Every structure is written in structure tokens, then in C-alpha cells.
Image 1 (cartoon, rainbow, N blue to C red):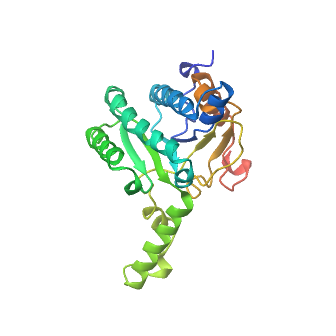
Image 2: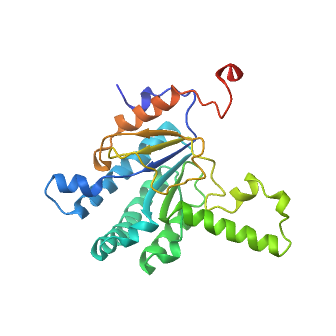
Length: 246
């Protein structure tokens, strides 16, 4: 059976990132409002987090709300923010039970005050948890992230804090939102779309990509397991040849 218990410990990904796509279309297929899809998507998040903990995953990053999502209808954005607040309150006990540390990337200063406050409170309450790190990408855009990193590095060069010839991948990494996270090993996108959508462009340089034709609310344990097993059967060469690896 395709359950988490069937996954081999060999060649497990360390960091999985997921583009949780398809909530709105899932609801539309059922003749319901988009918010119905988002509400059911929250249940999928809980199940996915718990399954990743069982697998022993170290890092899980979820594309929760992009910088472009602010352009959606105002009522949908308001609903998503309310859902974020209520979800964080409900899931705190789940995080504590599973030893999950909550983290975030993105410009969270743009979040409504209540959502911002709740997010920081849950992060504070879980900061000592030593199990999986769950990162929510909120008000996140990879181009914005890279732009901000370049501006900060340029300012430091101007102020003689960093020498131009010393700028390397490590310097760039330390100025990204994800400076305390490892690169992504496996990127999963649901809903059948084959796009990255401005998500972790720097961090997925050598990630394995897995696209599945299932809307996020229908993403089950079996789909997660299939993605990981697919990853385990791939040869990650990082520019080398198969002979060099062997």
C-alpha cells in the first residue's frame, strides 16, 4: 500500500516544498464558492504536515499566499486572512503534539494586524520545538526576495561591509528569506499546472520537480508517498555524470 510506512529510509528528501494549487477550481467543480475550497485545503495541510512528521521530514515549505495573491478580489483576500488566523489557532496543538516549529518567509508586514499577531504568537510558542520545521510562504514572491537581497548586498558593498569580489552563493543565501533553510530537494505542485509561479526560484535550482493532476483538497497520503518514492528513484547528478556518482 502507498502509505508513509511503505517509504524506504534510503534517500529521503530533506526539504519538500509544495505549491498548493487548485482550491478554487475544486470548489467550482462542486458548485461551491472558492472559500469552500480554501477551507478544505486547510484540512489537507493538517494531514500533509502530520504525514511528513511520520516520514521524518526535516523541512516542509508551503506556498500559502503569494505577493500576486493580493490582486485577487478583496472579499477572497479577507476570507483567506481570516482563515489563516483561525487555522493557526486551531493547529497550535497539532504543532505542539508533533514537535513542529512554525516558520515564515515573505513580507509579513503586509498581513492584517490580527493575522500578523497570531502568526508571530504561534511562531513564538513553537520556537523550541526540535522536530520538523514548517515554513509558510506568506505574502511571498521569489523575485521580490531576490530583489531585496540584491539591494541589501549593494548597500553593504557601498558601505564597505562586503567586498564585491567576495560575493558568492553563500553571501546571497544569507540575505534571502530562507537563510536558515536548506535548498529544496523536492518541489510538488498540485492541480496539473506545470509552472513554478514565482516560488523559491533560487532555492529550487537543483530540486526535483513533481507535478500531479490532483487539486490540493484531494491531495492524500498516497499522493505524497508516490511523490517521495518517485524522488527516491531519480538520480540527482548536480552537473556530474552518472559514472562520477558511482
